[in-house]
Length: 308
Image (cartoon, rainbow, N blue to C red):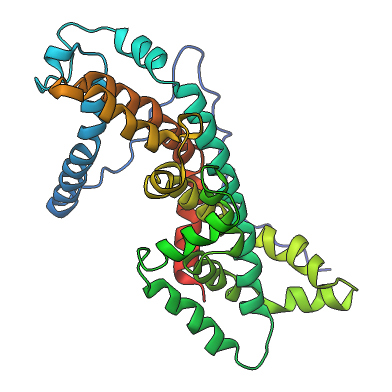
């Protein structure tokens, strides 16, 4: 009977010794990438552009803490800092009332234009009907009309309805949508997989359920972009408040700032420290809004630009 040959295997390696107490393992050094001159130049350009864009805001904030004689001394750190400007402007002008009017108009305008524009955009992107493209291009053609062309007819309509002097003309027109936002949302809707909606329709979903439960959640970034754009436009709008508002109790923030310029600039005595202080107070909400929605804003702009 043949004997089984014995294999000469190498001895097994001893198990690794546990690290001794008090002695840290040697650090793993990552290879440092050399920064190219082009990348350094790019960072320098970006930092310079950031400084250029942020300087006016820093100057405005600094000037709001300065007395009247030091507003234009171009010092970013006030020599005689004071908070009296905020107290005086809050008492001299009803900023709380005007900011409340502006918040109301901004919310109503942003929500109205987002819902109405999304409905129209969904119709242009999902449904197939004769003359769809011609109607869509006709709608886009309205963007070529300057606002001054429709200014007088729109005023006559609101005057006939008895709404001049109220806040209604500042936001109710958004119930009919906006050509720009319809185009923006339509491009996003066109990039959504149609199979999702066909499967939902097979399961018994109606048209409203398709739009409400499937289309809107999938285009959330684009909706947030629309909300932010319209909120900024409504918050800073001055033309329509100048035309439609008569009573100071209905003034919005931009209309109130215009009234403050006229009030504090009477007889050449310009109180710019109060005007810049009011500007700071009214600018902060927009900064906070864009800061909270920046992630969705960037995502919405990026995805809307590549889809469709």
